[in-house]
Length: 191
Image 1 (tube, rainbow, N blue to C red):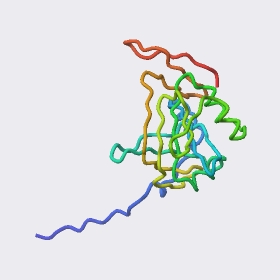
Image 2 (cartoon, rainbow, N blue to C red):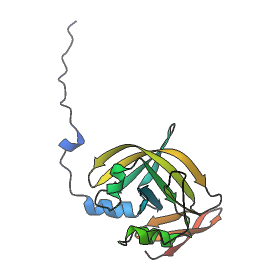
Image 3 (cartoon, rainbow, N blue to C red):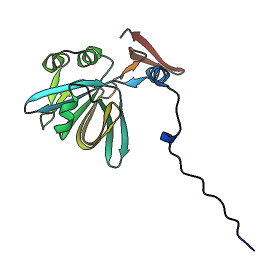
Image 4 (cartoon, helix red, strand yellow):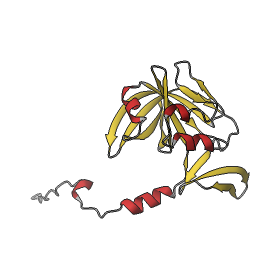
């Protein structure tokens, strides 16, 4: 019996397929997805810096790790390149002022005027009353598009029991203030 030869199909990547421009629709769709608000912090030679971020997610439990995406045009990005440690402070719904201050164009020193700050043993700034705070060691970094994708190994954790998270969706901060059997109620604050 003779085996039939099957022609190999050329391998294609997604980059080989022309895509329509989806930027505005993508931005609109992603703005509609609610995300926890965090302030990512660092300290270098005694100088504190930080930014508000929503592009943070857990990566693995073994080892405990997270992914943080930082816009490479942000003032904080230069610190990411030279730091080995950083903090992630997931904001409680009572900390909207902190989120606004760290997402504004004010100088880094002025940003830390919002909220009550303390430090981790290594000097990394930590926000008191945060829903959760992580101390991370930078493990890997990759540039992708406009952002740097940083993988952080979680070295320490402080979680606040019962703190409700601050959520950002469609350009507004959402405050969770009560649970019901049918779902979660929210009140909106214009952002």
